[in-house]
Length: 297
Image 1 (cartoon, rainbow, N blue to C red):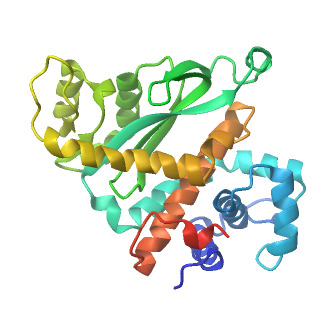
Image 2: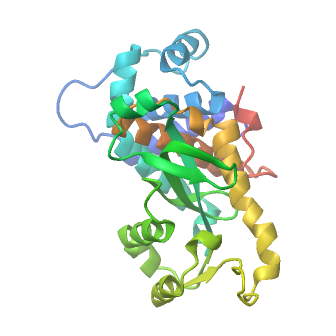
């Protein structure tokens, strides 16, 4: 296989179709299959199109050979929101089909996902009650929206992810994520979870240790240097680079979602695009597994 967008989408289509092929047992098959829909969404994220209407116009001109039928913007939006479970399923499928699934070194961090920039937007938004105000210390700014929590391998392959209100504590969200995927944790041994100071808590570390997870984090002020801390700074840059891929190359902050389902599927769409690129680079033996350059044009 070669590294280009057409090859990636073809391989992804086959992967999805093998997983869900024949799953529709009632009704007339849609002109755009679920497999094609997800591939179309991945292509949109990789090519950096924020507007769905503009994206469909572009696809009709340049991708008609791969997608003979394309719905109107409202139909695409409705189908994409309904496909959220499939998008989430394929993120996990691509992870398990890569060499990185067996890596027991995990990195966790959270990053802001703004959903509104003005007070009137906040007051009339359909996200009220789910989104909230938060503070981004790395950029010294307040925002209104959600936080994306991502647990990934050092290569950037997503293992777990969740969206949460910024007012909820980081340890609380991570504990809930690990509880939801308790089966995944139980079947592994010797997990090393690398995080920042925001997850520091002795009771939380004891709770993780009970599940066989060792926590590696920087020491806080007036705390003795922790074991393994000297190599932590270099490793911590990995999760920052993963967030930079999502925001700088996949335009996470320009998701355009205005509802619960809209934001969730647009974030998942970008995580799947990154996972697909890593998966395809791994299968083709690319020297840099998280490079999107071959697929963004």
